[in-house]
Amino acid sequence: MTVSADALAAFAVFADHLNFTRAAAELHISQPALHVKIRKLAAELGRPLYHRDGRRLVLTTDGEAVARFARTHDERLTQFLSEFAGATATRPVVLAAGQGAYLYLLGDTIRTMQPTRLRLINCDHRQMLSAVRSGQAHLGVSVLDVLPDDLTVTELTTFPQVLLVPAGHRLARRRRVTLPDLDGEALVVPPQHRPQRMQLEQSLRAAGADWSVAVEAEGWPLISHFAALGVGLAIVNGCVPTPPGMEAKPVADLPPVTYHVVHQPSAPDDPRVAALLERLHGSTR
Image 1 (cartoon, rainbow, N blue to C red):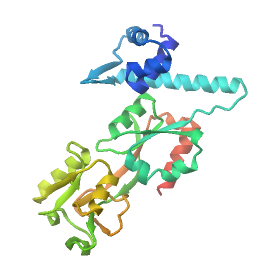
Image 2 (image 1 turned 45 degrees about the vertical axis):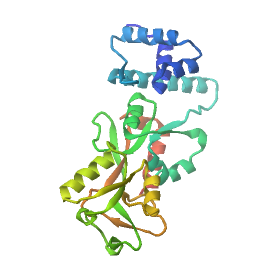
Image 3 (image 1 turned 135 degrees about the horizontal axis):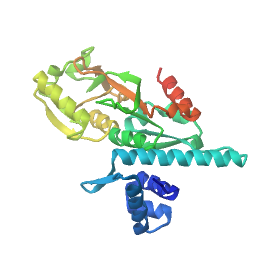
Image 4 (image 1 turned 90 degrees about the horizontal axis):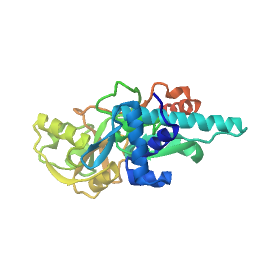
């Protein structure tokens, strides 16, 4: 079996974009030429490297492994050439996380690291796992419903789920609330099919609470903003700041939310990644 180093490098760029137009533009080659490189690479390896999921291109498990190897190979080559030339390699560590993690958990870590030492990817938890599996990101941070068995996962920090209520609301005097207390209330909730929305609906149904949707909103900042405007009550992660004029009451019968750090088992062998891991855990203790 022979594998072209050029094809590996091209596949790594394609895996970053999962779009032939953008990848070909970055590589300064034509789309047909990129198609040929990846098709030949797949033929040499004897495995399909990507497939279509509706209108999207998605890496196969083998494609993730090839992309991870290609990126690792590129990093090691860059490191070797820098050391050979007597220079210091400046390749950054790549961190993938969602909006909530960046807003409420990772700010101190990002602030203390020089921009050249850290590159950030903003994505949901599925995209984060794919980025770590394919080597696009060294580390990922997210709330996970199911822990992957092919990656190393450690707990970062845990928060209760809390109800945001106006200070004058009937529930504002409670030390904590339960889901039956929300009977008859209108709630600001994430869009349908989001994990938080699905869990909330199932829990409210099991508690027998008859509630209604005040508005669907994407992301904790907008959800808490609508709650502060009086549109409806909202259940958010306990790390979300309480808006002025609102109270945050723990919801006793909802499970706490845990943020996890995810990486390849060998990732901490890289001192840069090990240092970032230490910073992440130190900033949330």
